Length: 246
Image (cartoon, rainbow, N blue to C red; front, side, top):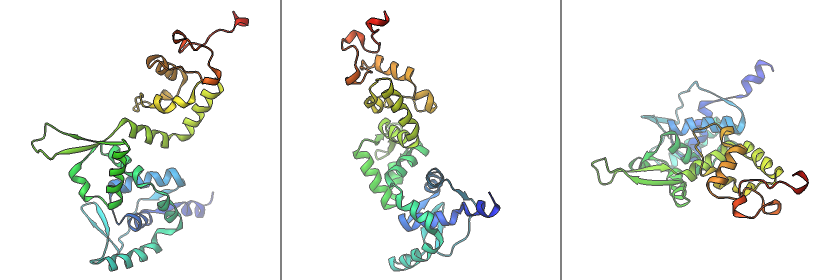
């Protein structure tokens, strides 16, 4: 690959920031860290970490906004930022799911204070509400803090499973095929993942031994209904030996 090709594959931090501000209006350093990783995962491009001072972008204590005292001024400056973001960033930003970004942000920060949410952009606030309704986030009250209104937003097990399935979709598909090929019930994958320790590596989680342990522990028939070889309760988790093999 030539040097010219390498340069063409690098997108500037300014471009990604411009695209994020056009879409969300306000982002912080944590948002940018997550967008950087998402961009690489989706597009395979590195981000040039050199930051360029842009007259249309304002930064205050790590929070980026579009310069302008009125909505009209900010709109005009967003139009000018559109010339900076480029087509690849524009396409990427258009595909971003704010709810997934919020889950990743809560995961990155190991929980966020409910009070902090008021400083988030509108898309994040709406996404947090939706994720809570879907059970991916939850709020707890910290009894140790001497403030009655102190609450923290945390990622639930369901939320962790959602991120795991997004991050390892190809590995999960391989595992699904492995289960299907062996006559096991691949529809159990989601409930299986709900019981797992996500501090482990992906292949420490997605393996047959682990799946068998789950089926035995939670009294699940691991066989697909069309290929179940033993419907008796005592046979769950164990393959019945065919007559011609005895």
